[in-house]
Amino acid sequence: MSLNPFGFDDAPGWGAPLSASEDVVTAAIRKEQLIKQITSAQEDLRALFDKVQIVQKDVEKLASGNETLQMYIDNLTMQMAKRR
Image 1 (cartoon, one colour):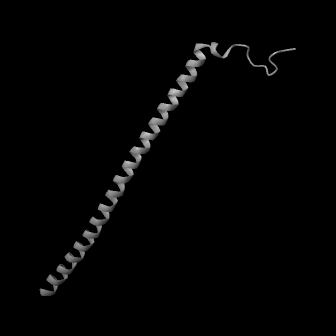
Image 2 (image 1 turned 180 degrees about the vertical axis):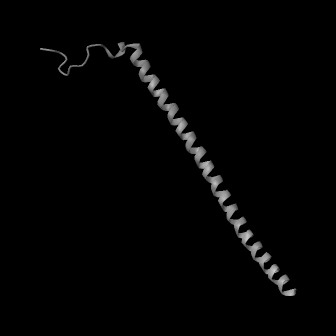
């Protein structure tokens, strides 16, 4: 009769090979770095999105101002044409 009915390795848990534990640690570190990079990229994207919204509002204001100026120019042109 076997003392290990589940087929697990008989190696003790504390005696895990150093390379296997390094792989787990390296993978965990790599995942943590990726999470930090993703979080940083998300923050950068949020900042860019906010800047884009500000610029869009400025463009809308300028476009409205241009329309007003164009109407003013058109009215002046018509008035000058009537005077001649």
